[in-house]
Length: 203
Image (cartoon, rainbow, N blue to C red; front, side, top):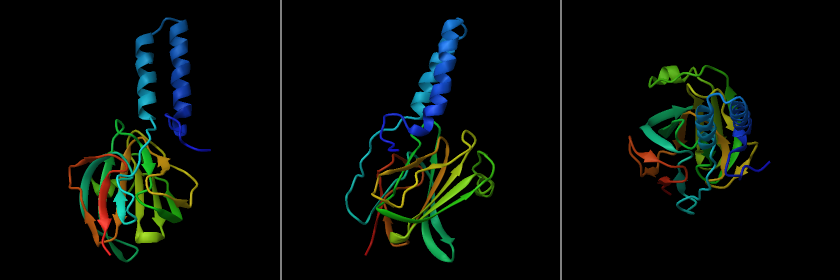
Protein backbone atom coordinates (compact mmCIF):
# COMPACT_ATOMS: atom_id res chain seq x y z
CA UNK A 1 0.00 0.00 0.00
CA UNK A 2 1.48 3.33 -1.05
CA UNK A 3 1.72 6.06 1.56
CA UNK A 4 1.17 9.09 -0.65
CA UNK A 5 -2.00 10.66 0.77
CA UNK A 6 -2.06 13.96 2.63
CA UNK A 7 -2.57 11.93 5.82
CA UNK A 8 -0.19 9.09 6.72
CA UNK A 9 -1.78 5.64 6.60
CA UNK A 10 -0.35 5.01 10.07
CA UNK A 11 -2.77 7.57 11.50
CA UNK A 12 -6.00 6.16 10.06
CA UNK A 13 -6.93 4.31 13.25
CA UNK A 14 -6.34 7.28 15.58
CA UNK A 15 -8.12 9.65 13.22
CA UNK A 16 -11.10 7.29 12.95
CA UNK A 17 -11.35 7.10 16.75
CA UNK A 18 -11.19 10.89 17.13
CA UNK A 19 -13.83 11.25 14.38
CA UNK A 20 -16.18 8.84 16.18
CA UNK A 21 -15.71 10.73 19.44
CA UNK A 22 -16.45 13.98 17.60
CA UNK A 23 -19.68 12.57 16.17
CA UNK A 24 -20.76 11.23 19.58
CA UNK A 25 -20.05 14.61 21.18
CA UNK A 26 -22.15 16.29 18.49
CA UNK A 27 -25.06 13.90 18.99
CA UNK A 28 -25.08 14.22 22.77
CA UNK A 29 -23.97 17.86 22.83
CA UNK A 30 -21.04 17.04 25.08
CA UNK A 31 -17.66 18.85 24.90
CA UNK A 32 -18.07 19.39 21.17
CA UNK A 33 -15.40 22.12 20.93
CA UNK A 34 -12.87 19.93 22.72
CA UNK A 35 -13.38 17.02 20.35
CA UNK A 36 -13.19 19.31 17.31
CA UNK A 37 -9.78 20.46 18.51
CA UNK A 38 -8.76 16.85 19.24
CA UNK A 39 -9.75 15.80 15.72
CA UNK A 40 -7.82 18.66 14.10
CA UNK A 41 -4.75 18.00 16.26
CA UNK A 42 -4.83 14.32 15.25
CA UNK A 43 -4.96 15.28 11.58
CA UNK A 44 -2.01 17.63 12.12
CA UNK A 45 0.09 14.97 13.87
CA UNK A 46 -0.38 12.50 11.00
CA UNK A 47 0.10 14.96 8.14
CA UNK A 48 2.04 13.54 5.23
CA UNK A 49 3.49 16.38 3.12
CA UNK A 50 5.25 15.86 -0.18
CA UNK A 51 8.98 16.54 0.05
CA UNK A 52 11.77 16.37 -2.51
CA UNK A 53 15.49 16.15 -1.68
CA UNK A 54 17.28 19.50 -1.93
CA UNK A 55 19.94 17.85 -4.09
CA UNK A 56 20.01 14.98 -6.58
CA UNK A 57 23.74 14.48 -6.04
CA UNK A 58 24.42 10.81 -5.24
CA UNK A 59 26.79 11.88 -2.47
CA UNK A 60 24.22 14.11 -0.74
CA UNK A 61 22.85 13.10 2.67
CA UNK A 62 19.45 14.54 3.58
CA UNK A 63 17.59 14.70 6.86
CA UNK A 64 15.40 11.63 7.46
CA UNK A 65 12.84 13.56 9.54
CA UNK A 66 11.73 16.99 10.76
CA UNK A 67 13.21 18.05 14.08
CA UNK A 68 16.05 19.69 15.96
CA UNK A 69 19.69 18.60 15.80
CA UNK A 70 20.47 17.62 19.39
CA UNK A 71 24.03 16.41 18.97
CA UNK A 72 26.81 15.79 16.44
CA UNK A 73 29.67 13.54 17.44
CA UNK A 74 31.90 10.63 16.48
CA UNK A 75 30.71 7.17 17.48
CA UNK A 76 31.42 3.47 16.94
CA UNK A 77 28.99 0.85 15.66
CA UNK A 78 29.95 -2.80 15.21
CA UNK A 79 33.62 -1.89 15.37
CA UNK A 80 33.45 0.91 12.77
CA UNK A 81 33.66 4.65 13.32
CA UNK A 82 30.93 7.01 12.11
CA UNK A 83 29.82 10.60 12.40
CA UNK A 84 26.58 10.60 14.38
CA UNK A 85 23.85 13.21 13.95
CA UNK A 86 21.05 12.99 16.53
CA UNK A 87 17.73 14.57 15.56
CA UNK A 88 14.94 15.08 18.09
CA UNK A 89 11.52 14.91 16.44
CA UNK A 90 8.75 16.31 18.63
CA UNK A 91 5.07 15.52 18.38
CA UNK A 92 4.51 18.93 16.73
CA UNK A 93 7.01 18.03 13.99
CA UNK A 94 6.07 15.98 10.94
CA UNK A 95 6.83 12.37 11.87
CA UNK A 96 7.28 10.92 8.38
CA UNK A 97 10.58 9.00 8.13
CA UNK A 98 12.46 9.28 4.84
CA UNK A 99 15.52 7.73 3.24
CA UNK A 100 18.64 9.82 3.91
CA UNK A 101 20.08 8.90 0.50
CA UNK A 102 19.66 6.20 -2.15
CA UNK A 103 19.61 3.19 0.16
CA UNK A 104 19.83 -0.56 -0.31
CA UNK A 105 18.46 -1.79 3.00
CA UNK A 106 20.12 -5.03 4.05
CA UNK A 107 18.91 -5.28 7.65
CA UNK A 108 16.18 -3.95 9.93
CA UNK A 109 16.58 -4.75 13.61
CA UNK A 110 13.93 -4.06 16.25
CA UNK A 111 14.13 -4.09 20.02
CA UNK A 112 11.19 -3.73 22.38
CA UNK A 113 11.58 -1.43 25.32
CA UNK A 114 10.05 1.50 27.20
CA UNK A 115 8.68 4.88 26.14
CA UNK A 116 10.67 7.46 28.06
CA UNK A 117 11.40 11.09 27.32
CA UNK A 118 14.84 12.03 28.53
CA UNK A 119 17.95 13.93 27.47
CA UNK A 120 20.00 11.15 29.06
CA UNK A 121 21.45 8.96 26.28
CA UNK A 122 21.60 5.95 28.61
CA UNK A 123 17.88 6.16 29.38
CA UNK A 124 17.07 6.51 25.69
CA UNK A 125 18.72 3.12 25.13
CA UNK A 126 15.85 1.58 27.13
CA UNK A 127 13.20 2.76 24.66
CA UNK A 128 11.65 0.90 21.73
CA UNK A 129 14.17 1.02 18.92
CA UNK A 130 14.57 0.13 15.27
CA UNK A 131 17.85 0.10 13.36
CA UNK A 132 18.02 0.31 9.56
CA UNK A 133 21.32 -0.66 7.95
CA UNK A 134 22.07 0.32 4.37
CA UNK A 135 24.61 -1.55 2.27
CA UNK A 136 25.62 1.35 0.09
CA UNK A 137 27.59 4.23 1.59
CA UNK A 138 27.47 2.70 5.09
CA UNK A 139 24.39 4.64 6.23
CA UNK A 140 22.67 3.55 9.44
CA UNK A 141 19.43 4.91 10.94
CA UNK A 142 18.66 4.23 14.59
CA UNK A 143 15.14 5.29 15.59
CA UNK A 144 13.88 5.33 19.18
CA UNK A 145 10.48 6.13 20.65
CA UNK A 146 9.69 8.70 23.33
CA UNK A 147 6.86 9.51 25.72
CA UNK A 148 4.05 10.06 23.18
CA UNK A 149 4.60 7.04 20.97
CA UNK A 150 5.03 3.32 21.50
CA UNK A 151 5.99 2.09 18.05
CA UNK A 152 8.28 2.81 15.12
CA UNK A 153 6.35 2.20 11.89
CA UNK A 154 8.47 1.04 8.96
CA UNK A 155 7.67 0.18 5.37
CA UNK A 156 8.73 -3.20 4.01
CA UNK A 157 11.30 -1.86 1.54
CA UNK A 158 14.71 -2.88 0.24
CA UNK A 159 15.87 -0.35 -2.37
CA UNK A 160 14.70 3.23 -1.88
CA UNK A 161 15.50 6.56 -3.45
CA UNK A 162 16.66 9.54 -1.43
CA UNK A 163 13.75 11.26 0.30
CA UNK A 164 11.27 8.41 -0.17
CA UNK A 165 8.94 7.66 2.75
CA UNK A 166 10.15 4.68 4.76
CA UNK A 167 8.04 4.92 7.92
CA UNK A 168 6.55 7.08 10.65
CA UNK A 169 7.15 8.01 14.28
CA UNK A 170 4.99 10.44 16.26
CA UNK A 171 7.62 11.42 18.78
CA UNK A 172 11.18 10.23 19.24
CA UNK A 173 14.79 10.47 18.17
CA UNK A 174 16.49 9.56 14.92
CA UNK A 175 20.20 8.88 15.04
CA UNK A 176 21.87 9.07 11.63
CA UNK A 177 25.26 7.37 11.33
CA UNK A 178 27.22 8.47 8.28
CA UNK A 179 30.82 8.01 7.04
CA UNK A 180 33.51 10.08 8.76
CA UNK A 181 34.45 11.70 5.44
CA UNK A 182 31.05 13.41 5.23
CA UNK A 183 31.18 17.23 5.06
CA UNK A 184 28.41 18.03 7.54
CA UNK A 185 26.47 21.23 6.84
CA UNK A 186 24.27 21.41 9.96
CA UNK A 187 25.10 22.36 13.54
CA UNK A 188 23.82 21.45 16.97
CA UNK A 189 20.58 23.31 17.71
CA UNK A 190 19.57 23.70 14.05
CA UNK A 191 15.92 23.11 13.22
CA UNK A 192 15.69 21.04 10.05
CA UNK A 193 13.06 19.44 7.86
CA UNK A 194 13.11 16.07 6.16
CA UNK A 195 14.95 16.19 2.81
CA UNK A 196 17.06 19.21 3.86
CA UNK A 197 20.75 18.72 3.08
CA UNK A 198 22.76 17.42 6.05
CA UNK A 199 26.06 16.98 4.21
CA UNK A 200 28.00 15.48 1.33
CA UNK A 201 30.18 12.39 1.34
CA UNK A 202 33.67 13.24 0.07
CA UNK A 203 35.35 10.94 -2.43
